[in-house]
Length: 292
Image (cartoon, rainbow, N blue to C red):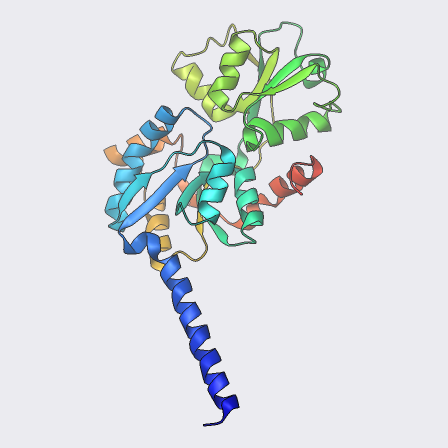
């Protein structure tokens, strides 16, 4: 056996071993029987846990895995958790999905989104009578949600810029509340003149009578855009991806379990989605200087 031949054999064996390690790493979460799930912290941790519990039980039955919900401290942690393999599936906003996709160099896959996420919207709220349109925010104070929030920052900022209102120079002050419900509290408490948040959380708070729409009112609702989705790493076992996807797609509001889960998720039903749907979000982020 020549030295050259031995070297080629050794290279082949090393490549095969590396491939085996990659496959083993990809299957790690499933090999120990646990599916680790998280979500961007756009609401309080207790509310996120409450919303996820029935869905987690449903996914556990559908996949045969133990489903664990792992809360994260901020939006960036949800991105890093998925990219660094500490989490297997995440409920992302459109912008955090784009960040994860860029950060992983395309190694994440959005599986499903709510029908509502095809034309999601944000609302601007205030208690100030003289604020009736976006232009009236000049010289005022405004609260966004998290800096990485699609519906609580990126898209509201984008629509402000379209209205020739630069949040950084035309407003007296901007603040980041960290979550949609916290934005409502800041506006209701008079800490800021106005706030921007996602319409779903706003409607939920109004329905639960946690905010009085006569005191805190919506003065602008944005046009629709793609937003939230459930995302996994691209190297997840295809069979598991299919089980998860099928579980979401078969949720039916006519069954007691389906009705409970869909209502908690503020969804009429789930549909498949794809990376291309978030091209406009990526463009808006780059235009706003929020994505390099």
